[in-house]
Structures are given as C-alpha cells and as structure tokens.
Image (tube, rainbow, N blue to C red; front, side, top):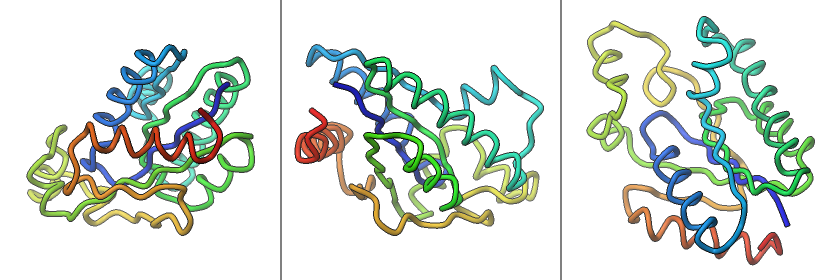
Length: 172
C-alpha cells in the first residue's frame, strides 16, 4: 500500500519538520516510507537552478516524477516542497494515483520568528526578493485533503492528523 503525501505551504511553515516526523511514525508503524525534500533535491540535482515560475515548475515536475515512481514501487512518499503554483500541484494530482495534499499554514509573524534558514531575515534586509510567503507569490490550495494550522498544533498532533486523514481516504 503506497501513496504520496504532498506537504505544501510557504517557507518556514514546518513542512520539513512534519515530513521527518511523518517518516519516523510511518516506519514505526511498519511501512516503507521516504521523504523527498524540495530543497534537498534542488541542491543535489541542480544547485544553480533559479526561482522563476518556469524553473519552479520544472523542479516540481521532477519531484512529481520521483514521487510517482517511488509510490508505484510500494513506498509511501512524503513530499516537502513549497510548490507555490496551483498548476504544479494540479499536475502532481493528475500524475500520482493516490495523492493527498496537505496545506500547512501559519501567520507570517510566526514564520519570521521561526525562520529556520534565515531567509526571512535576508528578505527583510532586502538581500533577497520574492521570498514565497513574504513578498513572493503563493497560490493557496483550494481543495487540499487536509489543512494544518501549524502555529496551533504540536508536531505530534500534525502527524496524527495526517495519519487519521490517510486512514479516512483508505490509503492506510
């Protein structure tokens, strides 16, 4: 039994943290799971790729292909990627048979405080422009299977909510 959990949301919302916690929980439950982290894939496969709309969409197509291949081969795949454009997420939904979109959200003030990669600090100093979630475009999902307000939940509660939804959908 395999499927894809697609975690989306602006920078600093908690995608990587949730992905890693989900991976650990699913493995504890006896499933084979893998995390595809958008930043990790980008840095290893094409570190010079920019952040234009076209480059982001190309990056997301690569992630979709990797996720679909893993899921087709029996691996529960947890994707952690901003995927700011609705078109990229719709493409993923079309290409991946068992797909569960989870939209992570929290107020920008919380994301600025968290700032795990220092991106908001750089953006607020004017060192980078177009940070998704600050001055960069992010099209909110219209019909995700699950919405998590990460500023109101512990990581454990988020994991349980995702597992519960996966069971409701018949994926687990």
